[in-house]
Image 1: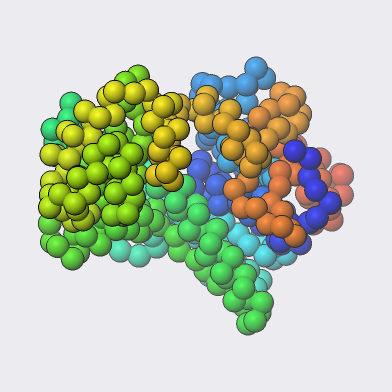
Image 2: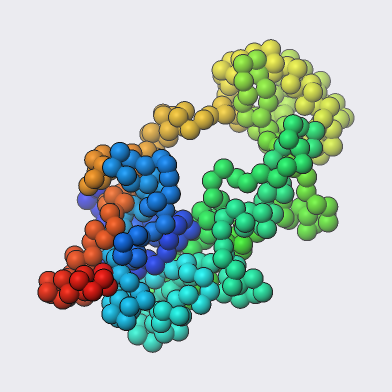
Amino acid sequence: MLPSDHPGPLNGITVVDFSRVLAGPYATMLLGDLGARVVKIEQPGCGDDTRRWGPPFTANGESAYFLCANRNKESVTLDLKDPAGRDIALAMLAKADIAVENFKVGGMAALGLDYATVAPLNPALIYCSITGYGQTGPYRARPGYDAVIEAEGGIMSITGPADDEPGAGHPYKVGVAIADITAGLNAAVAILAALVSRSTTGQGQAIDIALLDSQVGWLANVASAYLVSHMPPKRYGNAHGSIVPYQTIRAQDGELMLAVGNDLQFGKLCAMLGCPAWSTDSRFATNRCRVENRDVLMVLLNQEFSQKSVAEWLLRLREIDIPCGPVNDLPAVLADPQVLARDMVQEVYHPTTGTIRVIGPVPKLSATPAQIRLPPPLLGEHTRHVLQTWLGYSEDKIDELHRRGVV
């Protein structure tokens, strides 16, 4: 999809992005999708670690991992440990609206680029720090990695096969780095809130985002259930702890997802199956009863669903507005007509690889659409342009910085 003529809602907002890997880059990519100018600061010669995370790589050696979180950005290489590199970063921060970093706690202070140092130069700056455990607390100095946070944050304890299923007893991580992604989302939301606050006060502020906080917050109803009941939650596999039937169910030729969310839907399901008496059976008449008697009910439902194919059941369930869906693999998802109609797979031209397909922006804004304006950048692709246009550096000065390895 080509960029529209409408600027994004963050048009005119500038972001200096010191983050690497996923949580920070995901947050800044969202800001870029919404129209902000994002300048990604990378170490000369190596850049973001994810540039080397593969396979898979494109034919020209671009990492699929890096491509997923770095569109709509310009890349500037800058040695932050060199005093000249630090001075360039400070000059950029003095003119920026937003800074994002995900160094370990104290990392930016060691470079002289922390919020306490930068805020006096630019009181309107919104400065977002993303770490594993936050800027406070006994774990603040620990490095934060998604898989460790998933383990410590409880999601692995409730993810995986139920006790009576094969593989029971083994915790499972989520198939994507969900602690990183959630922290990135929380960072983007907090930054947008800080922009709104700044519009009335004129003042920026520091934002402290922790992967562990994000993971604990993501526990939602499961954590609430424990706080209310004091009963540690069990694993339910693909089932739901508080709603029945709300799980995958096996048909004649595969599995589908069935999501019966209330008693009315359950009654319609029973009538469709030719078993209307189930809806008034004291064991199943209410959701509470169905949760208490899930094992009995699921045996009955599995017997019925084993008689027809997935396609047949989906057709019949949709005819009576029972929520359901196929269990798609990734090829099916990315070819799904609804996914394509929503522009969730888009093409963008990359300078070394040619046309590449990427996941499209999620928000759909009518007047100021989110859009892909720039492909994921090559390492240092925009260094010269940014130093010239943003800081007014001459060609000779940039050449000298390059000779010294500063950029």
